[in-house]
Image (cartoon, rainbow, N blue to C red; front, side, top):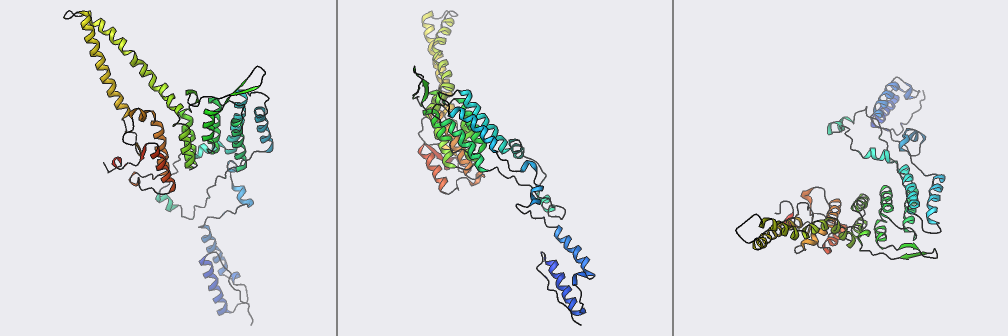
Length: 417
């Protein structure tokens, strides 16, 4: 009696290989000529194999039609068609090819078209919904229970849009602001920062902020020719608003680019125009009120002199005015000391010893921005602060030290008081 031996192939699980080996041994002993998988043990083997395979989540194959059908419609790659790019380029050409000075409305319309295309490309609504914290009830127990055979779902992955579309929108917005006849207004700068922050392209922020302060102002002469007049970089009008500086810095920290983050601080918070703007907005009203105090004190002293009979009115007016001036000067000095020496908000970055009090107050936003960068690059746990190492950390520490700041001062760290 002849028989044919079927060699077991390489199976996907150990159980399958064991069962096949047992069936081959049974074939030798019983000397059967049929296929070992067609006997009575075959249905039982198939049931066990299906049970074992159901415990493993299926692996999707990239590029397979089945995997693409399972992908939700909102997670598919968004692209800009040639029609969209031509439309955006046509709106931008109205500014770039303008024979004279383009108006602010034309530049704003071009930036709005780029902004709309960026929102469509990235799917801002879906992205904002994904960034919200969702309580899906995951815990260590649920993680263990998810290993059960019933959990066979696959979490869809968000596929990013093509980089060439993002680069096209980013470069076009940069070209609009760098165009010589375009005067960068606060509205145009705000639209540009929003677009680049949406696209995660913060590398051009330092140059644009510097261009906002140093770019020559275009104007028309009598012959209707464009004439460029230089503007004063230290003027209050060239200061970058704090909200735009915070947005730009947050974008640089999100993409983890330290040189760009430090350059943004140097071109926003550390500029003389920003300090003058802060002085004009926050210090000028109290100083103007303080300058009116001598007149108010004299009027009060004159009124008080009419209510007494112990001294001559002239002498009482002099004494009352001296007392009121002394009181106001003492209380004002204490308030100034309390305002400029407050350090409760400082956690990682502090001032060096000997820094003038006035400079501490004026440069507080610069110090807070440096501390924000240090928190983003350092350890999240407070008990690990001061143990950071690496080239970027040394550069950050040196950058702060040159500007009169100390990173992780030992005397102010937790447990070192």
